[in-house]
Length: 542
Image 1 (cartoon, rainbow, N blue to C red):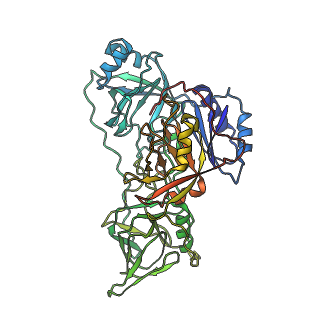
Image 2: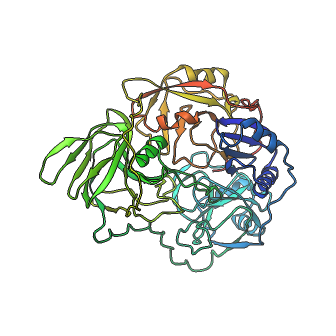
């Protein structure tokens, strides 16, 4: 095993191959180490996220290093057949790459069992290993901007099925009507059809009539407000308003990341002020322009970005409201949030919380995976849960200092690794010496950065797919980094040069477009050190 730094709460364990990775995963699942929060397996790495308060990095490394790589996960025998119409637009090209006929490609693809090795890239997207050894083809040189849901593809030695329409670079050889991801599956079944360890067999149904298309699963509808209860009528949603809570943790086996609030401290403060649990859902409001009318009586608090908050009574009287303190709203009161002067995301909590159906145990809206309640829209009515007796409202708090603005350069601490060695020494120095502009293409998935000089790679090979952490600075071929935020994909195929330190992730979630960012390297804890040079042995696979 080789341990590479990721962040103050994560390490990447690099192994020789996929069987070793799955063996270590099986060992850690069968006999968990207290303090580990999430495991994300990939082609030959295991991303381990942990709680530093529960276990130190050096102790975690020591205990993982003692594990045997002979373990195998024990599962109930489960074999899933996937019907495929082999008429994909890349079928002929794949046949040409392999020097065989398209019919022979189909015969080989359907002639062997596959195993779900790991999940990632999108909810329900499974990387299938096994199959005929000759089916090893490179990804497309130019990824497609849209691949349809159900597309069956090849990349390297893996096969996979796209669960939803998305961009992608796999070689598409067919399509299936079997839904890979379905939130309506009855319990105890999981939304993802394919789980790690499952056996999969592809079946050729090209000659059969097309099946009726499967309707996409609708998002859970908002419950109507109970008669006499409190509710918020949304008069203006602004640029983006989403329900966000502490996140959707523990779903990595299905290819689902945690998502959650971009500024966790502000979420917790808002809930604390109104007497809710610290991870309850708030409305996360980007850039202001938001307005609601209160139906009934409520207690609210607004935290996060620094901007105007106005209360307007039913009789037209209006006055500004302070942030970071509880405020009582009466029936007919209108609350408005203007454009922030510092920071970009505000958090509005209501005493009792929102009476909206959770998705996979969370009210967070994951904008990349398209999981969770729909975005809050103008005209929506959000019902509020009744307050249990004894819930205490908190006292006023001080707003945080130093919220990011476009006028001042934002400094973020970073931990170098895990793939710092894939870049030239000059690029590593440049990462921290030059200022980076935040581009308008930034969102909850990631902040796209632009520097005057791009980061040059020393290793131009393709990186095997590996887990990516919240805060990762992934560098695509353009050399312009992308800072992964709350809705980032679980796995990625471009090298991560560094990660924003955990204590600065909330600050990163408040950086406005057109601000400038500078990175400050700090040391990773424990014996984990930046990676030494190594050569990849598998292609990138998402």
